Amino acid sequence: MTDGAAVIELQRVTKTYRTGDVEVHALRGVDLVVRRGELVAIMGASGSGKSTLMNIVGCLDVPTAGRFLLDGIDVRALDDASLATVRNRRIGFVFQSFNLIPRTSALANVELPLAYGGVARRERRQRALAALDAVGLGDRVEHLPTELSGGQQQRVAVARALVTSPAIVLADEPTGNLDSVSTAEIMQLFVQLNREGRTIVLITHEPDVAAYATRVVRMRDGLVVADDVRPVPVGAGS
Image 1: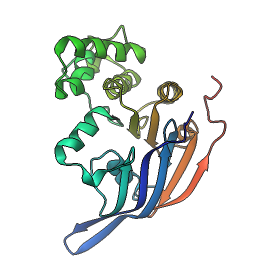
Image 2: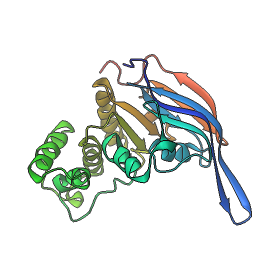
Image 3: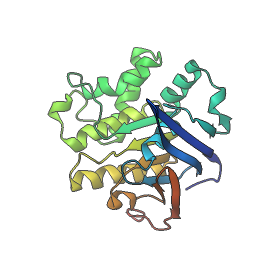
């Protein structure tokens, strides 16, 4: 449930890339507000600008023009160290390819953001164990990624995103490599996390995944072309 406060705000954001003499306009003046507690799906064909938008929201890239406000703070005012802190502590990332370290246990994979943040070993372990338990993998903590199913690997990735207690979770095609059963399980997990108060923004090209969202934003040619609230998303009553 949203409390009305804007946590993500894009104001006339443009992004232009230059390749030689060619300019690519990835975003063409996007206005978008995401409020605390929303579960938003961003949809669009390849080249629509949705991945560029996600990179800007995740503080992985900066606009060419326009403003991006995170919790009311203009991201342009932050230096590299401050941006790194934001990415590590305030935003959790989940990727299509899981991005797990192959020869490292589920527990060690989840501990990684805390290690980067300088958290002491004992606290890292406690928090990582709690995160794995929260995604239903409390009995798989010492398993390697190769010993887990695709759905379980993505649960480890979600636990890693949650271990820093971020207010915002960004998920880029989080079910793209999963079968339908695992997709439903992961999306129910996102729904539960959203009910617990986390703001979730996910990129997807799959309508059945977007159906779990409380709001669907559609992009085409670098612009938002539709923005629809879904009063009764999939899983709302489960």
